[in-house]
Length: 443
Image 1 (spheres, rainbow, N blue to C red):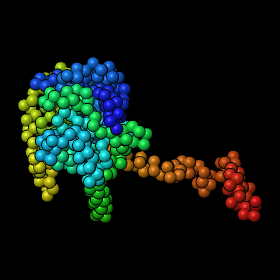
Image 2: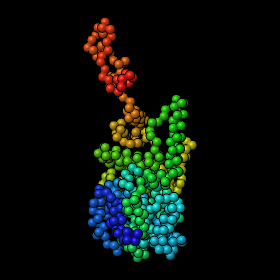
Image 3: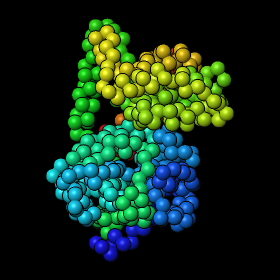
Image 4: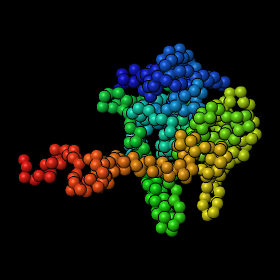
């Protein structure tokens, strides 16, 4: 194992999860005063080879669509990770980095958590990383966040840092110095897979193991929605045809819809910029992808996306900031007997009217749709399921059904001539299999 670990320099360690050639990654360099830079993924080998290893350096763990590591610019996710400040824990005092790795592996085994693909000594603490098979698209962020939160909560005993679990996080780069301890960041454990390389996990497999309660709750919520819908139908009420979403996934998808709406319209007019920024930021906070501490950084990235020259006023977001803080502290708001988060949770109709979203625009969005468009989509899904099951469309059915044809027309006769001729039937193409079924005695 020692020989294998020596092969993991900064590029090889980063290359185990940064496998794509498009998008951007970010570096953070410095100690007292830090400098951040972003680079194209294709330049990663060259950029990392030029790093001054005597300086504190951190590398982004995710990849981004723009040269800016804000979560709103997320492109894809490549791994799960936990940053553990073991140096703060009494049990870790006096232990070597390798002994810390053994403690992490033992704890994961006891807790039923798959062993990390890599364990990195950061100079004082350790980083555990679970490599994924392939990459996750940005739409999977809410579920990825749920897995991250579970791992951080479970590994809290080992010193897991609750502030280091977001998709925009940077972790210390292998081969670089930690100026606080003088130690070099390095790989201290590799969990081999069947091919001898670090083991990779299917995200679905990890989510199934890490989120059993969440999946059960989702299924229970789905069953309750079905029961409520059936009761409404029995009472003669109207039932929504919108598909069920978890609250955080719905918030993220609404954020994506608002961004795509501006793309469809070719931009946003000056008087509507703050409206778009406010609601985008609200849904970003609701999705759990960011928090009040990082809110203004994400707001700056969203504002530049709306208009690169726009100098928005932070004061107009102070109410949203206060609601985000209240949401993080666990506060709720009660309305008509139900409890909601302090952040804004509007209905679809409210947003459609607020942004004047047309039916044509709704047909291109994921979640911001009216009841009429939702029913239209439901009919299309139902039709697609029937076609997949082998059902034919009405036109084909009627053209093939003799009972729905006018046989005299198929024979080129008038109806009266057809009757006088003794109602002859037109020839029908019959497959050999049908003929065999019609003549049991034939072999």
